Amino acid sequence: MTVEERSGPLGQPYSRDELWAESHHVGLALENGPIDRLRRDVDRLAVEIGPRNIYHYEALQKAADHLETSLRETGYSPLLHRYETHDKAFFNISAELPGREHKDEIIVIGAHYDTHKDSPGANDNGSAIAALLELARHFVRRPTAATLRFVAFTNEESPFTRRKAMGSRIYAGECRRRRDNIIGMICLETIGCYSEEIGSQWLSFGGLFLPRRGDFLVLVANPASKHLLRQVSATIAQKTALRIRPVILPTYCPGAWSSDHWSFWREGFPALMATDTAPLRYRYYHTREDTPDKVDFVWLSRVVSSLYPVVAGLVVCR
Image (cartoon, rainbow, N blue to C red; front, side, top):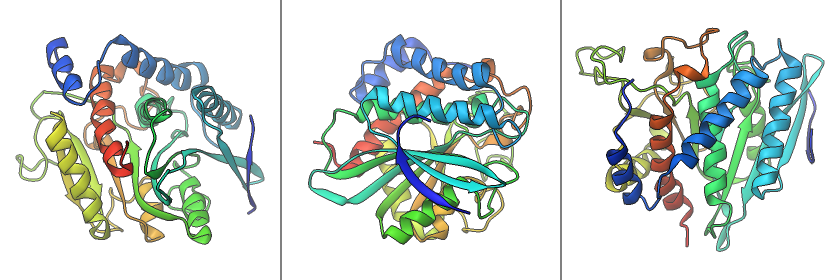
């Protein structure tokens, strides 16, 4: 396996009043623009490109090209981190804003752009990639004290999950070898499903473990990342109205280890996953029915707007 880096191309929705009140609270005048951009990015991935993975290799490369182009047009100088496995080339894609005061301290916001087999992946993980791009747009002109790095990972899904050729494992390993000082990583994973229906949230145990309504975001950390979890949870609680459920689970707990934050846990970096709980709520998970009409874009825009103060607090925006 070889690795190199280069740059170049390759539900029930909330009311309008509730959205405006919360967006005003976090300092964002929420209009149709953000929702339209999120929808456009999900449509581009799930409809125009479709299933994207080693089984749909050409589509995976088209997705990588789209992400590189989008980040470049936003104002970044993205890097393509190339590696080879299964006799094919794959790319993680990163773009960063260097910190002005603490450049060596790095916050990573990441999401995978591949999909499960024949799934078009609107929610898993188009919703998270759309959120990643919207966050990148929001922060591109904002001076930060620490370095802010956005990374789109390839090969999170089968047959690479938790294997050595998983895109985020390759990338996190590179970071460890370079001795990157990653002080926090947030993994965005399947974040577009929302429902106020009682019983829509599984693994609830009568509300003892998780609420019975799927109207919240779960933040998953391992014990070594509890300080990051506390900081993120406190910011969301203080500055937004988003419902969250912070959870601390063992590094190798089934369900907690199936996305890209786990790769950073393995390398000793503090990381957490933000998710709608995927198969515990989203009935179309890993199916051909994971299409854009199943994504609640109003909810998705609330998640993104609630992440603005979180990221700003982590990198200390000026």
